[in-house]
Amino acid sequence: MKVRLLFMGYLKNKYLTDAIELNYEKPVRVHTVLKEAKISLADVWLIKVEDTIVKEDYVLAKSS
Image (cartoon, rainbow, N blue to C red; front, side):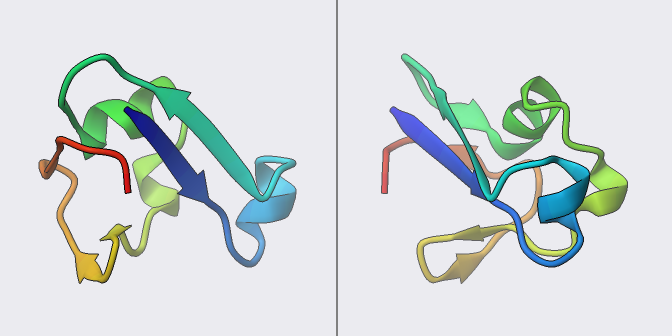
């Protein structure tokens, strides 16, 4: 499963990229993805999966 994190605003400059892509073999929580991508939770205002806003304990089960 491919997970893509998109950065907006000043986060593009802070993390020096527009996006980070990670691959997982099985379902994973959003919190785990952010931790493995070394993204500070203080920088996260909104987590959107397809057209739905979710919390950091949401389980990602498929690529979108």
